[in-house]
Amino acid sequence: MLFALKNLRSEKTIEAPEDKFAEEVLEAEKPVLAYFWLPRSGPCHVMHPLVAEIAKRYKNKLKVVKVDVYKDTKLPSFYEILAVPTFIIFKKGKPAGTHTGACSQKELIDFVEKVVG
Picture: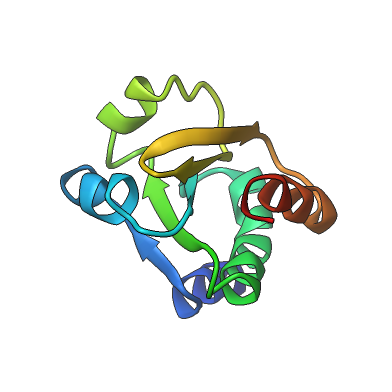
């Protein structure tokens, strides 16, 4: 698990707490993949390396941010996040796609490709 957390921190992911969410996500020029996660969640830890790979693979097309739902409780409520991990792709400040639950690398890439292309 420490390896997964290290991977997530080392790639092009940005923390987007509530006080920076508008700047990092809603005002972003390129599409944003917001990864809502919980530190104690096993499925979230499984997703860390896949999220890091998405950040690396799409670094010129997509911004990847992570939101810790334990620390930032207003955002999950606002976006009606009932389970983690949840991924929301924002385009021009508006949600353009949502995926909830752990998934394979192919499923995550397919989800991103539908919006980003």
